[in-house]
Image (tube, rainbow, N blue to C red):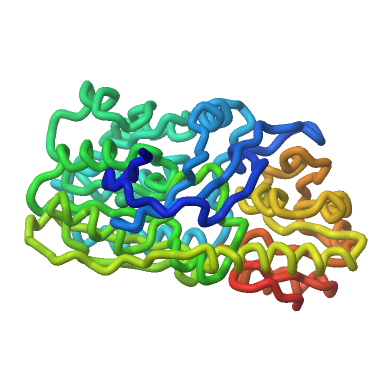
Length: 386
Ligand SMILES: [Zn+2]
């Protein structure tokens, strides 16, 4: 019998949402066109006791192969909105740090947040299996640990309790969340705080944003599932911040060891996910009447949206626009869609742009409107032509 990876319950609702043949990791871009990537599949289940939503078809071997490949592209901090988001994250954490604080960022990615945080604390441990943040080692009070965060991997480096732990966009990738949370629990003490930021499942499902369901993510969290789980370790929710119109939620927990009664969880039904298929069909239907299509956003969402387009529509896509110069001239997965800068030269040849950058949709459309007059299809909260 299958058990919930978060609470071990066997009361699981399976087959809430299924999709065959999706890219194993949408974080990859290629130097050559039509480079095939390994595909995997999705079958979302929800634990009826704790509310945890996860992909029972998650293929850890496939994902590890993809993450260790050279084509993996990390997000660059290019958007003005993204920088203001980083400021908002710091603002949430700031009341809990001072020059005596021992901090730990698990999954520090390209090191952006650790860089900003380091001058504000005494010591910062930054952990990530990728090498992008290796430059952090040159900062005096940072110890960069180039490994997956497991009890065995970090034991040689960290032998003290931690005051502030940060996990941004990590927990949704983990297929053994209980092991991770157990390790975090062991490194915390009374009044330690843990900041957890994850995509907001409730918002994804109510917006029926189908391309936010992809194989890189093992799990999808709604607020109260996390609250109840953290409560088991004695953590109380003390602050919460929502970013990008509720698409991301940042929950700040403090270890108070207070007893708090369980919060009601949201249980979803297949009907909730039928709306995803309605949006997929609607988008494909709209695109069938255009000839020269472009995607805006060559990040994770750009690749992910391709998983859901018909071959006929995919073949009509000429470009993927992105301002990130490290992505330009590369190709989206299993396609001949080249990534180019959003400039007039390319835009003048396009009939319609499909937005695949839900976090920054408003900001991008405002900018596009200054140089492009054709149709734009919004996708963040509804499929709509503007
Ligand atoms: Zn559960």
